[in-house]
Amino acid sequence: MVNTLLEKQALTLGFMPLTDSAPLVVAKEFGFFEKYGLDVTLEKQNSWATMRDKICTGLLDAAQMLAPMPIASSLGVDGQRIPMITPLVLSRNGNAITLGKKWYPLLGEHQLPEGQPVNAEAIKPLVALKQQQGEKLKLATVFPYSCHYYQLLDWLTNAGIDLEQIEILIIPPGNMTTALKLGHIDGFCVGGPWNAFAVRAHLGFTGVTSSDIWVDFPEKVLGMLASWQLQNPQTCKALVQALNEACHWLESIPNRFEAAQILSQSQYLNMDLNIIAPSLLGSCLTFKDLPPRQIDTYNQFADSESLQLNCPNIEDGRWLLEAMQKAGHLADPEQAAAQLPHIYRPDLFQQYFE
Image (cartoon, rainbow, N blue to C red; front, side, top):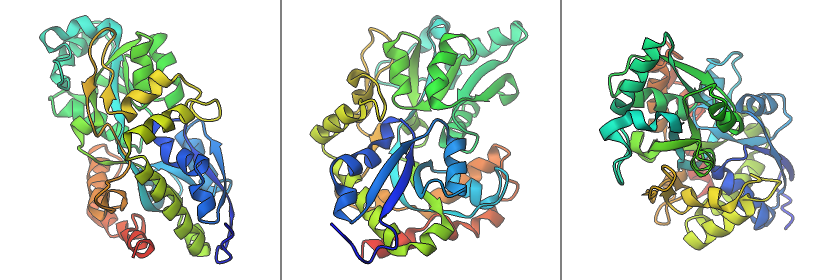
């Protein structure tokens, strides 16, 4: 369908080959972009830093982004200050913490209690063992300014673990399981499908998900330059409407299974269906030969009764500012909070769905 009101019809959107890229893939494969007059090319990225840089240089029109990324770029905490916005939450939850299988026996009585998350209290013997060896426990996450990073810190500190005893490395999602297999790291916090991959390959065990740490918190958002939205207001509206429709399509379990089949294709995740499907169907694989945990909201894309789940909420932005301060990424969250309405844009979302 041709929409003559659009400032730009041909768009290039960046995505990471992760389970929660589903809204972009669904919008492409099932014609939601086309319905709103958009001709979209999806471009697979290898790292979040590359994704950010391509947005900043105009190589991408918009992208699937980590929820803190537009804030970090707009405030300049990751280098040069580049004003970005998000008018749409693409997904909530979706991350998990996986540790190498060789550490499982050290958990003792804390070994994956059936149906329950593992408290970081359980890894204190592992931290102590590493100290005795003159080493730190090495845990990886995907990007410094990510929910993964802040959730990992909260999981550790809530159990009273001294972060001075932990070394946190930044590794792209697709390299996590290789690093674990080679012994370069002891565990990681990452999004699907990599936790399930580690369990299926008997490389590790997944003890806790992000929904256990931060309940139903935004994980991926639609990110773009603030200037791009100003130059392309009708195109931005069409883009948000198409992706929001895809998010709601993903509320159906049969639809999710169909999405998992498409995501398994080489141009997207290029991975087996039995690795991609579990989290989309509300199942968290834990350890080889153990039953999975049932977590209905493992991957959350929409709420069939409300649009609010997809609205970028200022309060969620404030929560992220506090997390950034705790991580040492931000000196004064109150001063930064004044910028939030220019970054997280519920006003645009509400305008698009009036």
